Amino acid sequence: MEASANRKTRPVELAVIFLIVTYIAHMLGQVLQIGGAQLAPSIVVYTFLAFLLAADAGWLGMVAVGLGAGLLTMIATSSPFPPANIAAHGGGFLFAAYLGKKAAASGKRLEFRTFAAALVLTTLVSWTLFAVSTWLGLGGTDFVTRSWTRYGIGFGEGFVGWWLYGFLGVAVPSLVVGLVVAPALLSLGRRLGQSATDRSRPAGGAARR
Image 1 (cartoon, rainbow, N blue to C red):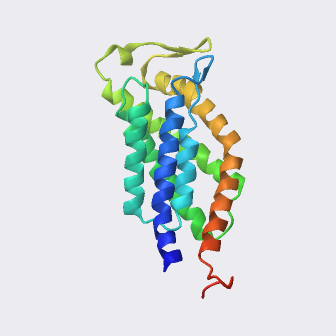
Image 2 (tube, rainbow, N blue to C red; image 1 turned 135 degrees about the horizontal axis):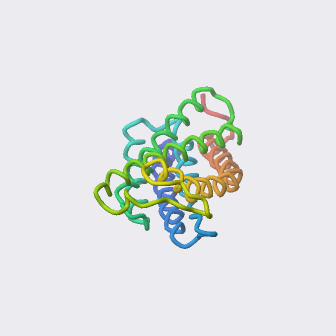
């Protein structure tokens, strides 16, 4: 019974811990910049969390975690329209959860290339949701009339210019950081999985049937 209770509470514990890490990682995006490129590994953190929870958590729980990710990144952001984070990172988490459930259904061990592909797609979805939400939220202001330039490259005016400007300066560097961090997260995930398996075994060491 004790082992069973531990297994039931573990997803909640994981969600709380990694949501806190997501918040911290997103806050770091305000100060970790290289040549104007914002580094925020929050996307890789909540993508990893989505894969951790995918096999056992239902969609109602996933929506709750996604909402938490959206609200926490909204609080931690320095972006001009903070509510855009709810759509971007809440939606990004749910998209990652969908990919995680598909991967879990295959029954195969999660490999780096599978997770990396999911991270690339989640980053693309998250940035696009953020760009659209920000553009709509700041409609009618000077934000939507400015010309977008980064690293000496002019992207012009309008939404496409804004999307490219932010994708190059925010999404791409965050993705690079995420791909660097991903192997360590996957290693952690395997240790967590092994720990859960060990706790589910009776004292004698034989697996329950």
